[in-house]
Length: 285
Image (tube, rainbow, N blue to C red):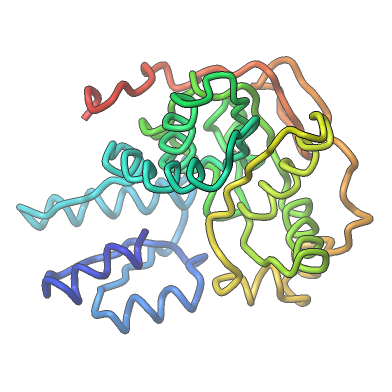
């Protein structure tokens, strides 16, 4: 998202400020600086909302001191959701029928957009949301998260809870082990959300008929994770196993999505814990 916004500097010579935290990958920070974007790193987490809360707090300060500034707000921007019609149409052209779709959920953009378009064609398609342990999106208590790029400490309005049939939460060590297994077996590499989706997608496929098709969305490649997921020292420091033997064969199951979990877990009850209604087209702008 930040790299995409930074294109405005290059194309329109428009000033851009990106607010992040110390967890921003060095590669991304360097690329942003090379484009001419200004990067602001918040020094400490918000006491209740963590790093995300600190970033949003600093963002509000910047907006207040720069009248006329525009924040694309990836959490609540329906244009982000609409843009994924492109990916949905690509899947429709390539696959005769999709029986289950597995998507990670962070801002809610691609999970909402792709699922919405595909369910118009295949209303019986099963939609599985993949979240990070410690994320509040589907009702879990907020806690510090090692996983980046998915999960949230706030409730993005882009998320449409009515579209999902079940939720899976995945722990950091399980995501890392899944990433390494995917690399070893398929020569496909990606980040946290890719590992989570791969782990859940494989299990979902094992529960379905051989002729049914399961699609998982892998949001990115390995470039940002050379010094974390694919760094042996980092994994040891954070007690992250990289061998497939550490992966559970299946998720545990809970009936209440607010019941705290610490390992790969699924729940068939999907609720909207934010208290806000689901988005309907652009009515919620």
